[in-house]
Length: 73
Image 1: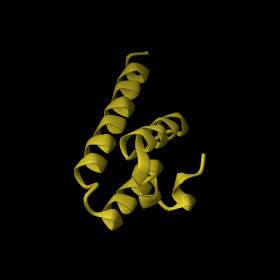
Image 2: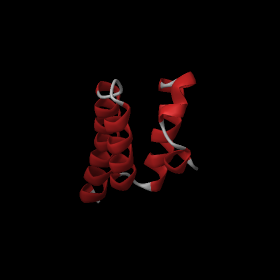
Image 3: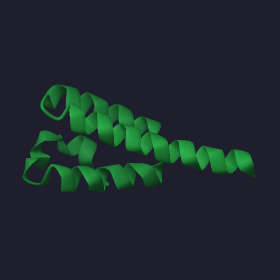
């Protein structure tokens, strides 16, 4: 049971890490897309949904920086 709890914490940490990385590299569209794609592969389905929502909020009108093929729900 402790392993499951630790895994959940590490998944949450990974989501936080992905957000930090994406926020810091948002100045470079090409790099942002690359890291966003990698993040979606690393995260669980639920976390990917959270990350997508965060991207929409964080980059509001700039959502066009993420191609539709990576932004589908």
